[in-house]
Image (cartoon, rainbow, N blue to C red; front, side):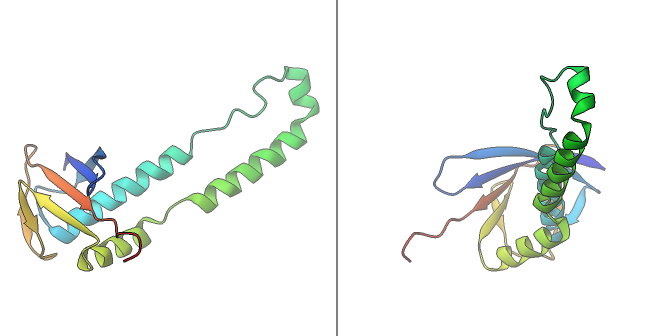
Length: 140
């Protein structure tokens, strides 16, 4: 198992981000690579949601004790809200694979566009992988 840096781009925007993707091996199909990338992205997004809000930060210990019930209700509401925002990796993978087949994004590996989901790819720590998302034009 090793980690590969994947570059995510939105075509024409100039925006690029790097994502560390743990891979189960050095030989994967394109489907497995997309699955690993999407799963890593969902994990990163969900992990970011877990950042705790500083509720009660300025309260003294006595005030915290007096407001404990209110703070617990607020914490529960916050956790329920977080749970609703969590992304489902399996659903995201399904949508990504469907999007790939509809040309919603391209996968470029070492300068070569890949089109066959069943194609097996040999990866090294030097392999350059780009996921380029296309954005439809407004109005058509």
